Length: 327
Image (tube, rainbow, N blue to C red; front, side):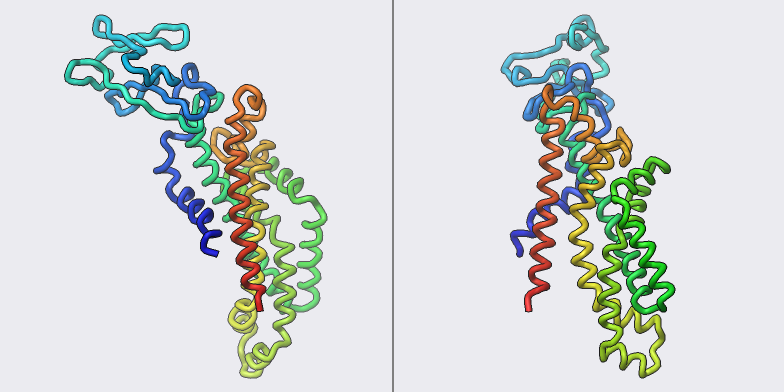
């Protein structure tokens, strides 16, 4: 079990530390002319500016070659190439060494860049963080709705039970991705609103499981004894019945995390989820679909990350379910 938790722990670290681990702002274009569609594991030479930013002046292995300086100092200006164009910038804009020459650094673009010259590693880290947080928020919200609906349906009268059942059946009768896309197009959601929409459409199946557990517990000796002592309906529901249904609800919720991540990525890929330039795994995949032959890494790297995360979460949940089912 412990080794199955390692990928999940790494995922939690990425979620919490993505702003610190990402080498660049995920929405910042480093240089659309010089660093557009740079392959993975490419070094880039950058000059340090006085304001704390950097100015890319060369990319590729040649930037690391001894003696290579893709810039020069002429008449108090730094001269460097920007594609076929030669640009100049005042020397005082740069951090200088004791000899009065601009200080440069080499930054590795480990995942390459996209069509706008943005660092793909940073965008993938932030995209993974956003996709997982949306999925977790959606699953937690739908679990809460399922718990309330399942308790109400299992303990209340037939009228409320029938109303909840009809509502759940109506939601389940429409393919969820179609329903969510329709709502997303109507309200053009942010990340928070997308999580709310996913939560509002994801509770019926879990509510049925909770309702079944509640109806089973309603005739148990514990509940009958609590009612005999004068316990209120609220106390019976939340103290004696709901805790028994939480294990079933927890397993059902865990099984829905990975599909919800895929659903969010699908919605963002289709343009009905998170809106660019915000980075989610779906938006990054969408940005790279037309560049697949020209720059395979733009879609392949976030796609592999998405597959790895879904497999890691599914493995942990399956392991937990097997342990809970052991006699």
